[in-house]
Amino acid sequence: MNRITTGNSRSRQPAEPRTLPSTRFGAGRRFSWLMVVTGGLGLLASAVIWTDSIRLAEDPAFQPACNVGSVLSCTDVMRSDQASLFGLPNPLFGLVAYAVVVAGGIALLAGARFPRWCWIGLNLGGFAGAVFCMWLMGQALYSIGALCLWCCLTWAVTIALFWYSLVHSLGHRIIPAPRAWVRGVQEFHWTVPVTWYAVVVLLIAMRFRPAWQSMI
Image 1 (cartoon, rainbow, N blue to C red):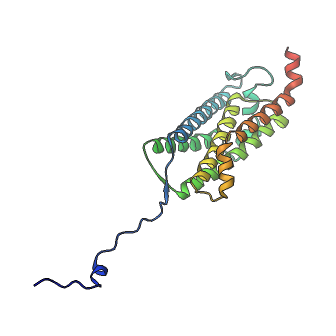
Image 2 (cartoon, rainbow, N blue to C red; image 1 turned 90 degrees about the vertical axis):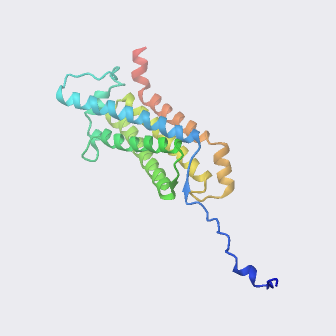
Image 3 (spheres, one colour; image 1 turned 180 degrees about the vertical axis):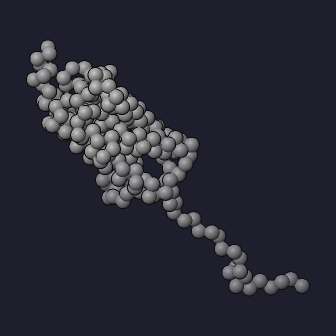
């Protein structure tokens, strides 16, 4: 005898699982390599500054290799009060922060996907780092009156890291924003860092123009 199939038999079949929206986000190779390169350069600069500051504390006559006159004088920057703003030498914060960035970039290259809070933390950390670097730049230009080339390198990589972390987060909807804004940021992503770098170079040129003219 054939089994009679009722209309309710379909409801007894197991329901297909629903696909939940992903709460973890990865990154393409371009942005992952950006993290590795900027973090690596920042780590290198922090390590050199830290090493030279120790040698300078041990030997007041020590001359760092980045001393190239009165304007490019790492010694003046390292001996300033601003070099240890929070009671610890600033390079120590850089060693930790940039090492985390490098590790994150390597993990992304290996296929890792991080939760939203990690990306928000990267954006907030990048923003804080960029603000801190711009404050240090202002102090170097208008209070200390000298530049450290390794410090300038950390400014440059922090600007790039902050901005492109924001571009990545907007593009992946980690940070919500109107779609028109996101498309504009993605299409003209280069305008902000180029303008930012141009303003920094202009400020440096204006501040030290008399010193450089006297050297010519």
